[in-house]
Length: 146
Image (cartoon, rainbow, N blue to C red; front, side, top):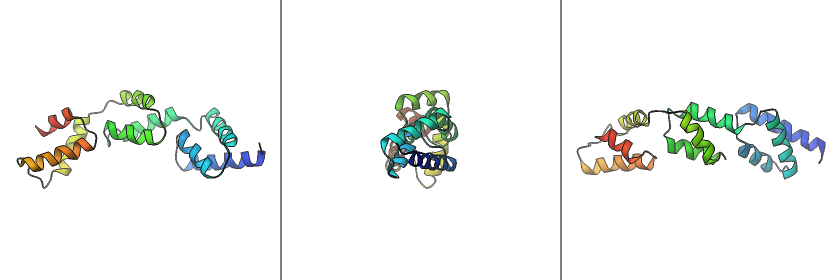
């Protein structure tokens, strides 16, 4: 393993992490995209994990804490899964941060239904479909729409 290339990869990874916190999967992809081989990538990832500069659990906890009031459970799961976090780990932190999905839906629904007549079955079905596609559960939507 070339030490200068390893040093360059570490410096790149540290610069990248100073811009924003990233998951292990995201940083691994960035290093590979830059052309670093698997051995160097793994050495950099291991070094960063050792110094706790790279910690998926901390990332997941902070991400859920800062976004749970803006996105519903399904949206958070999807976004974290795309970032390379495993579903079991996501569910652990979602359970820690209990939030009122009904209140979140009510807020979103107020903005969405401004010009819609909910007494019209077609408009009501459109509203229903919109929020089902966003990942809200049937029971939460029913609770808010009634």
